[in-house]
Length: 359
Length: 253
Image 1 (cartoon, rainbow over the protein chains, first blue to last red):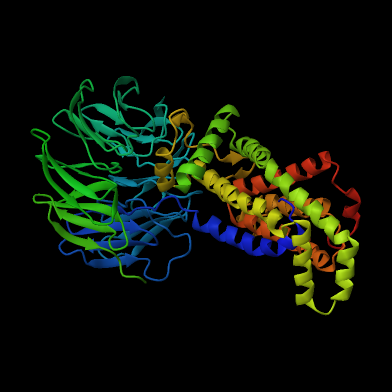
Image 2 (tube, chains in turn cyan, brown; image 1 turned 90 degrees about the vertical axis):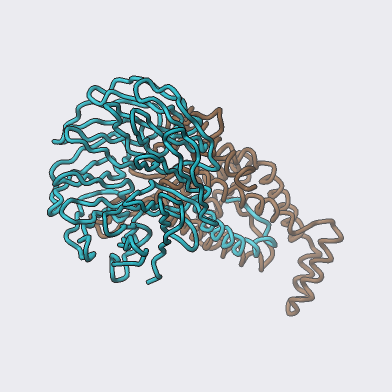
């Protein structure tokens, strides 16, 4: 540290204390957002120091985990996975995976084998749960008791959810690589896409679609990893694509929403929204739903890509995938008042909001 | 505004340097720190001149007489000191301004290190919006590993599971080099109050910086370490380091 004249040194300690405060105060460059999943009765919200079950009918809290005061590192930000046997699986920053009974929130089992934070969404498929860990390990756990079925070590951090099919598990790393594994955890192929991958790939009509930082939408052969085509994007494609009738829909951080042909990537429609698109859009039979960082939730008609409704969550930022369950459209919210907002998918009318009462 | 003028240029500079230095983020921090010290060299020199001027004043007969005459009247002594400063045209705060200017740089450096490391999705999302067109987005995320350190986390040598605690090697190095730097580069003072202050500084400043190093990302501790070493080298190059002061256990007065 630099030398100071003696008479000025009396100012030094208070000034350093001020600097310490400034270091701490300026330390955050973004707020984590809630992870949301839903079944036919409840939404499950993982956010901050808890996992919450919320009644779909009225947005009231059904249960929360933990009931007692959580530990300091027990932080949840990834969307929980829901198993067929009725468990809610939530990965945490404390390197643990918690399996909770969906009906009661009771702890069924805990997995403590991860060596790093769990940032990406876990995914349940059949009798297994797939958990990505920030140190690059993908665990396949037995859903029944959390025993490790197999693990795979990627070359870099895994922040994205895996995509699980009957034959394969696909997952992208922050170090630009998408991996295809078989259901036993053996590497089938890997492909460098040239940018960090933060979201799960999508499998659309036999084509694997991958978004990455600074890259176009990349279409790969899911069997071999060979590139089929690319579709330009304005900025980073953070969210996974969705598809309907041979058309893939995706948004980027520049707010551009695009519809491309799955067969060759040719552009069919595009629209520029009012903010970054950070969450996977949702689809029903006739509509595409998309949310923006600036607080808008919008509905587009698939028939002609025209805008149907547009609702704003005031003083809020919207992140993460849109979750559609029985005409109820839910999205994670970052604001003082709301953690999750639920809309009527048909009309866009706000049905309820959820913010857990403080402990 | 702070983002536009301070944080974003620093983040992109770090990434730019990182790209040239074999994608080694620790090397990037070291080079970046040295660059910042070169940029702030005029401020450092101004501080040195101010210190030298203060020493000359404190060594003058008038100052010494003032000390004796108003020994029991602190307020009067301060009034006389201020009068003397005014007469000779010396501003005692002139050495403080360069230091205060360096605080935003320090905060900017800490912010740019943590932003470039992007340790969680919100930070990565934020970083992706701040990368200049001429900086390759393929650099993100940077590799935060160096030796046994994760530059985005406080450094500990051993896993807490092994010994029950982790050894903060980098923090120890920062404390030792901070103490050495203060000891070697603080000039002797004839003024009793300054002596006392110097003694306190040589003890508390290393501990305070050590606390920052212990608590914050080790990338910041690396900055402190490099900065301390650079300061000693810089003073040595100007012939202003008194190596014999290392042998005295008392404060740097």
